[in-house]
Amino acid sequence: MLLCLWRRIPVFLCSILLHFFDYLLINIFGVLYLKEYMGGGDDDDRISKLPDDILVDVISRLSLKEAGRTSVLSPRWKNVWKHTPFLNFDADGVLQKIMEHHSSKELIEIEAPKYVEWVNSVIRSHKSPTLKEFKIHFHLDNKYEISITQWLEFAISRQVERLELNHENFINPNEYYCLPDFRSFASCKSLKALSLNSMHVTDGAVEFFLRNCPLLEELAVCCSHKFSDLEVCGPSLVLKHLDLQHSYDFRTLKICAPFLTSLKVQITKGLLIENVPMLVDLSLTSYSVKGLISAISCCFSQLEVLCFSLTSINKEVMSEHGNFPEMPKLKKLFIEYKTCGYESLVRLMAALIRKSPQLEEFALQYNYFPPRVRKDRGVEDAMWFPNNHVKVFKLSCDYSRVSDVMVYIVGGILGNCAGLEKIIIDTSDGYFPVNDRHKIARRSKAKQQLEPQVPRHIEFVVL
Image 1 (cartoon, rainbow, N blue to C red):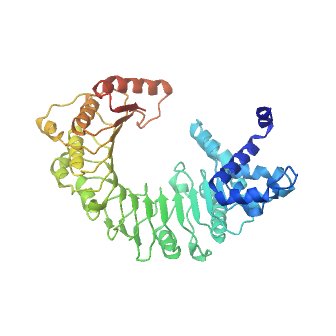
Image 2: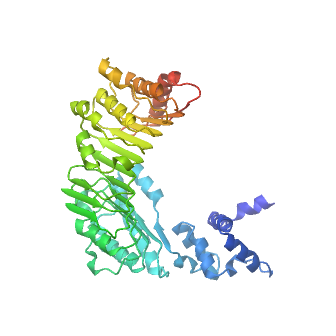
């Protein structure tokens, strides 16, 4: 009987109830209050009698579209959703449809105006004086400049704490929206996190936020093409996370932030890092090992997570791999190797593992495997790098063909890492999408080739 009744409840109402129950479970004070408040009376609609702040809290746990649909429940609920402090304009379903569509540009032309009107209509109705979060995620170009700027003004005027504009790196950079001059904007002293993706952002705009947002802890500016000489510096900065990925136009980038814990950049030339005593998580791209070492020499000893992409290595690795400083605290290492020459890779891999005595997780992405291993005594010697702390090894590669090099590298890890507990082989990490039949074939090849050499006590996973 109960099951039949449950099936008759609209899906969005079920979602409300589930989120409400979640609220009760995680909010002990709310539970005690609700028990007392809902204890008497015979009215079946006791939820609607709850105070506004509790109803808004419950609504805020729904998606924005689900929250809007609650207005039809009763007159009491008509305006509750308009007070939510979380405005996340999620369009994942449409974005997925665009990605899969054979003529995605034409589909964007159809869907973008609908998205803009949705955002505008919500903003016109919104009543909350403050915002915890304002998030835009859609393919939008400078055609919608007026609307996007108005959204920014709205969010900042509502003392937003987390602001995200993600226009997706899908449109022509020449058509990017350009972030306006913020000197005429209202104060943004409440801003704690700012994320800007696929738009033109200048050095001055970033430095404005750094100067005028005393609570800013997270800053991400990705796929911007207007940087030149940027300084992220200041003794009063509370910035903890800085992400400048896929922004390549820097002449110089200076970072001096005493509370910074994680940094993601894709340059080493012109990069100056100093006074970052709390930096433990670093991700960057370099054209050479020498440039990599030079750029981050001040923080090797404190790093716990290091991710780097090397794009042009040949004989240079042979002479530079031994110059890596000790990394006594490093626990996670990820290498993306974007060039040919597995001999250089083996030497680099071995040197890094030797320099990281506390390493627990090692991940390697490499898509240039030759079909055969060239026998080289120097390479054989380099494959000796004992480390008993490594527990997880992940190899990501385009497994469209069988390669002895994969067996060679996995064998080297097995032979040197006595504490190994898990090996993950990700066969999907190629540059081009593949259909399900090819995915199954790749997994089958990897399993057939590598599983026989993996001891039974080690978990072996093929993705």
